[in-house]
Amino acid sequence: MTVESDWEEWLTSALLSLKIEDEAFSEYISQICSEDSIEDDEKREVISEFLSEATEESVTETVDEILRRTEVRRAKTKAEEEEARVKALEAVKVKELESLREFTSGNVENPKKRVLSKDEQIIRARLLQEYAYEMEEVEENGEVEVIKDGDASGSIDGDPLLSKNRNAEVVKEAEQAKRLASQAEHAKVAARNKEMQEKQRLEREKEKKRAPKKEKRRM
Image (tube, rainbow, N blue to C red; front, side):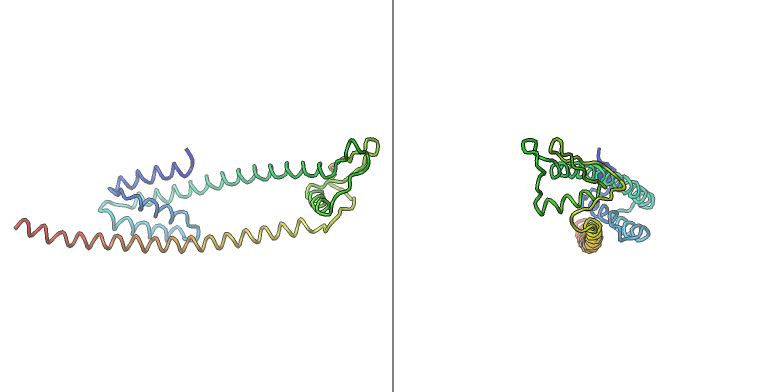
């Protein structure tokens, strides 16, 4: 069972114990709990008020457990994401090393040194710098041997800051994307909150209208 499915199953059960069967409640609470821009105290207040309007049962213990499980859920999710990130990086490194060998290997049928294109030279330079490799030509069989050397002093084609600058750009873009996503999610949650409050208000008005009709029937 995944982290999300385990969370959804528990939350549905917890809401049923409060006599709340509407799936929209579970979805809304999950959105609130997933929003990193909202402090825990604010989450507690919003969820408590939201549930109190939908049930006559005490919601304090349920809200406490929701927030506790939210922390567990967040920790497990981060662990899964980190594991996936590490595996992805390892896969990329393997692929890049294969590319490095391809770009630097000679042709067995033609013992002359392979001539790399401009794009291949740029890629080779980035790979060599990233993995601290140096080139050592082996003239006997016409191949180029790649030897790892943490203190490689050989010259590298291309800009030596290419990798570093690119990494900085990637980090900056990722941070900006995260901020924009957080803002969008916060706006989405706020809109959902307003929608659910309006839904509850309409339900209460319907109940008020039903009450006089029931009294008239009894008379």
